Length: 188
Picture 1 (cartoon, rainbow, N blue to C red):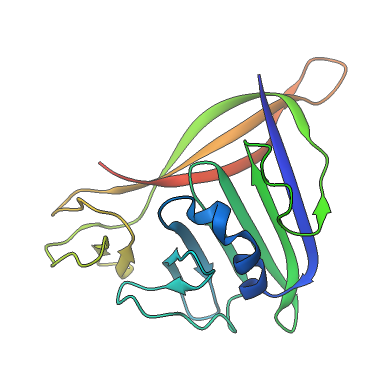
Picture 2 (tube, rainbow, N blue to C red):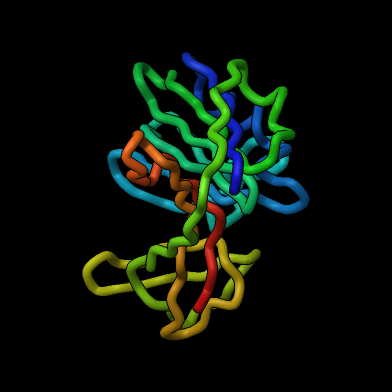
């Protein structure tokens, strides 16, 4: 059985949420961020100071981002823009040591079973010079996408790994997915 812990803050900018959670998201290296804006969906690396950088190692402006998911193997930060760049941030973790991140404690989810899941990202690796731990996926239908992974070579694929948390939801023994947490990217 597994337990999932959570913290949250309302009326917070994405930059402030990232800065608040940077040490747990980077935890020895960098975290990965998946950023959605009206013009693109892109990956970035979360740095120890809370900044996010692209494949050119340049800091990204976050003013147009309307949703973000930043993650590593132990935790995930989710943020959704609700009004004028302010939104709700939620940090979930399999480890209890997230106390002190964000302002509000969430109910602990206990007695959870888990299932590991994978999502295949569109595109296959293309032959490019990998700089700073980045690779490039490409497909005719979507163009190219820079991904913060190492070891991506021609025709390999990238998988987005996650854990689904299952819990009994009623008195009849029915079980459902009650939460999902992104945990990393993997080249196969």
